Length: 250
Image (cartoon, rainbow, N blue to C red; front, side, top):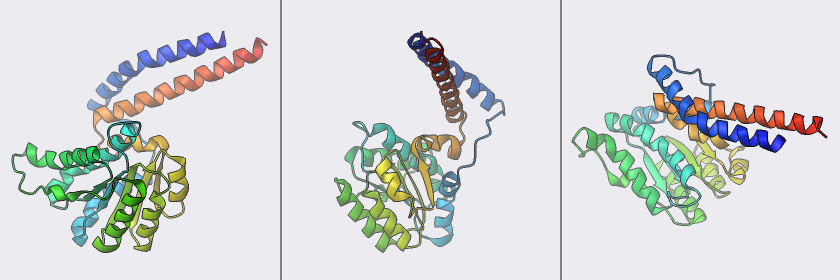
């Protein structure tokens, strides 16, 4: 009985997700966006390019050591969504961030995201492909390259969101040594363990997938975030009900 309830709950979640996303999207477009809980890391991310314009120093954004092929795909895309969200502002202000990667597919993706605003307005003269750099193809090679970049290029801030392991602690320590405002996020518990002591703002687990909703506040992103929350509540309810029935029927 309990197993049947869980199965029915999963079916309800799968069927309700697209419907809920459409309903929430319509509501957002009609001027009824959801109230999102404050997350300081997103506030810090939004101010990165502004600080770069004021100081004349670029912001550094790392989207991790993974690529867009393999098990790290979703996490890498979550990190890349930061580049996508800030690309238009970078094109408007001329203060492009320095984006670093450790995978060729991530390099192409980040370059395309930075180039897109220039392409859309028909003038790519302000776009520089060297704003995206591949610093190494292995995690600790990449970490060494990122540490050198932070030490010598003196960026205004350091954001690291994507697929990381314990090597990210080396980059964070260098950023802290340079006195940088740092934002970091990962789904890897090893990375989170070393980030907590040295980073100002940490995105934990699934928070990294909410970048589009918090920074861009596009109706589609907001709707997907609400639909995911609804699905989570349904699953929690189903699990609690199944546990109660299993206890009662014993």
